[in-house]
Amino acid sequence: MSIQPDKNSRALFNSRIGAIAAAAGSAVGLGNIWRFPYEAGANGGGAFMLCYIAFIIILGIPVLCAEFIMGRATRSNEMRAFRKLAPGRPWFMTGYLGIAASLMILSFYSVVAGWTLDYFIGSLTGRLALDTPDDYHRTFVEFTSGNWVPLAATVIFLLVNMTVLLRGVTKGIEKLSKTLMPILFLLLLAFCVNSLTLPGAMEGLAFIFKPDFSMITPRVLLNAMGQAFFSLSLGLGCMMTYGSYFSADTRLGRTAAMTALLDTVVALLSAVIIFPAVFSFGMSPAEGPRLVFEVLPAIFHQLPLGGLLSTLFFFLLLLASITSTISMSEISISYMIEEKRMSRRKATLICTAIAITFGSLCSLSFGSLSHFTIAGLTVFDLFNYVSSNVLLPVGGLLISVFVGWKLSPDTIRAQLTGDGSYRFRAIRFIVFCLRWVAPACIGLVLLNSIGLI
Ligand code: TRP
Image (cartoon, rainbow, N blue to C red; front, side):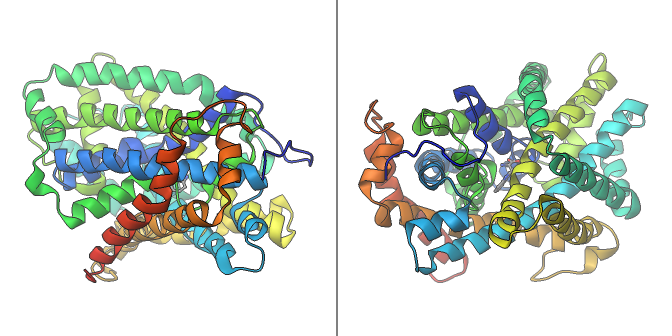
């Protein structure tokens, strides 16, 4: 199937930069700045980093290309894309997996976005100007175990997300984020420089950049793979939907590589900020989801104009989060609109109601529900773990097998080379990874984690 010029009324991103900005807007978010450092910290630092980067290259970029190819070849959401390419076959069920995973992620992600909102307000009012790292630890634990404030913050965040989606001001948000994200980037760079001057910085750098190969365990592999999928927004058709909006002359391979590069750089910057500070302040790198919310405010506090920088930082992080939550909400919303013929309004309300329900449970799992566990995990941990470590890789596996084995090589070539109008040298590498590397890697890691091999 060659590249279809877009004849129907679906909106298109109209520039090359627009395509990259939208994909990067979805990819860059709390996954890079909050999730990556704490996962790396809890999984042996350097060992995790090495596996993560390897997975980005052999799984992330190929699956990103596969999603873009399916999206632009069909100009449809995930479910319809599978229906068009494999009519009458059960492949479209992958779409249900995507919807379930996106709602799960939206639920716990909004809790962390709610914390970000609270820390933004706290920085603005000076409430976060504390003294020792210990104070920051105590403040965070008190805040999240307090039930009501974090719950309200989660709900407020979801209502803001809903307003953006309802008003259709997504475009406005994207434009805003396109202009403000470079500031976030510069701010991260400045914080890096600062962290590197802290006493004990080298210990932090060694922790994250010197892999101890004996630390590469099956668990580390699973977590690194989950993080690679999570961070690139892969496995549930999110990037497929974005690919469906790309114009005919967007170069898919280049867009995929640029998105992966930007996303990885932001994650690396975040690690270079966090770990030197963790070691310098004598904290533990394996704190889990609390890590970043305890370390960052402590770093800001010892900077000149710390309150201002902290306010700006949490505001920009909030903006980066909303471009990500918009992309995950769109999965279920576009399903309800395009497949169930609902109005955008109704679809958005339903999606928000589900996220508020499950988001509340996730939020309370740091408070009253902290003793309510399933398989030893709280609701928040369960959603976080199952979606990233199981659902996204399974979705990615199905997409890889489909594009690698079922989709005609002509379609792949046409999509990646602009119908033969330019060369794309990595095409063999991409197809090889989709056919062999992704199914083997994902299969082995998943089977191993459930104890089958
Ligand atoms: N990648 C985003 C982040 O790093 C989160 C995200 C947005 C996502 N859309 C997604 C994760 C789709 C998985 C699937 O913050």
